[in-house]
Image (tube, rainbow, N blue to C red; front, side, top):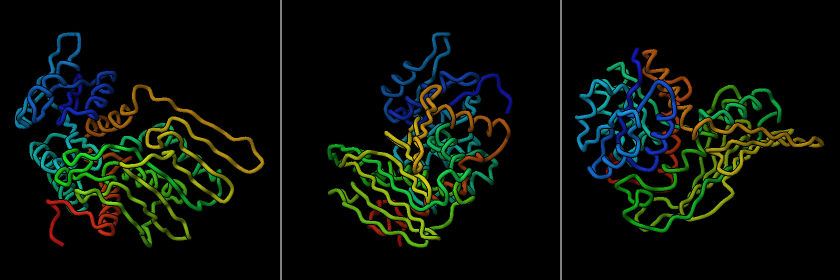
Length: 343
């Protein structure tokens, strides 16, 4: 695909979509073309906020059909609540519009497999927007692991917690919107676990056992989850994710000869520390060029321009395997959504 400026359509003009738009508007060779939302006023406000000073007007609509029939839309970014991703992805792929969809791409592996099959049959790009996996700091930590700077990998520990007031209508607590800590934030604990294992071992193995316990909200979704994934050679990844708690939100990687720590929000970290016995700590820092979303956006546009249907960094198989882990954890803690298929 060769176009002068790559035009993005935004589906769902919420908080995350504004961060996406900030990055797109600061990157050369791309722009926001239009936005679609259920609320006309909210979509119009988003369009006004990100319309550039050069006179280009961002279109705003409540109809996804308006977006998908616009020849100036070269890619679709989906940022609606999790439960609504699948329908939007299907509609976009059938219109042969490349898709970058917020994490989790969908709520279960079965649905993901169906959509990846659709992507292949239509030869149309589809990628889960796991922005963390594209960050320069995470690339540098992976290089430390590949270089064996902490020796053999032993275990991982991480937390992602924040305290949100209970609101049964909030996307965090509403089962109809696929609420719960695991899908909303626990995916970060899992995707960084997969990154670490792949870098340290050369591939990410399947867990031999998963243990998980959760505290459920009155709506039946997980408001707090503790899980341990056990891997071959005695390696384990322990994590807690919660929307009713506080934590240090670090990610610790323990090896036979050292410790690597991603600090202060590991999923968006710009700083990491390597500590080895009898040596001064080593700290590296990789600040964002814009706001952190730029790296995944550039990777997606590059793949789309090259005519690929997936991105090497987060290929279809990676999304599918992460969802399989989340399916197992949801089964263990007894969280089901109204749209889940019968067991």
